[in-house]
Image (cartoon, rainbow, N blue to C red; front, side, top):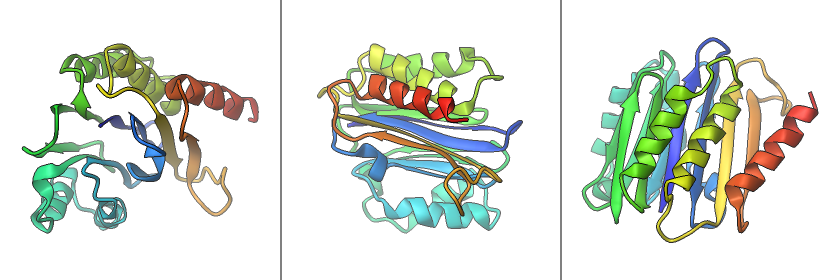
Length: 209
């Protein structure tokens, strides 16, 4: 019921997640990121504990593959999970359990993961991948994440429709939100066009700096 991109920009030290779903407040459940550490998207029958557990393991220096194995081995519900991870070096891992509904799948490339479940078809993942790889690496990570999310939505997105979307970007030393490394934390929790609303909010955010 969700499609997401997890990615990093090592040149700026930014890690982030963009996600959309026909589900209320997807941003409260799916994304996690820490500057210089990594980023995670946990979805399908979401295990929200993967966010803190995964970041702890990444912070301890484990690779994306090691974190994926560690989380899934301890989870009896892993067949219904979908998980994407990018670690501090840009290495990636993705998992789509056999019990994820509808079309469900993902792709892990260099420095990014795109995945989704209950999608209209594989073209959603393909469109997100192409949008990411064709995006300008000099653009802010949040804009590149939004471009991928927009492409996935245009290709069909969540087969049930639209409701919410979110972008989370963390960069070490950002301190935009005092005492944290969070640079962008924007959500459209219940909106008829959540990704477009996310774009509007992102424009406002960059007008502040």
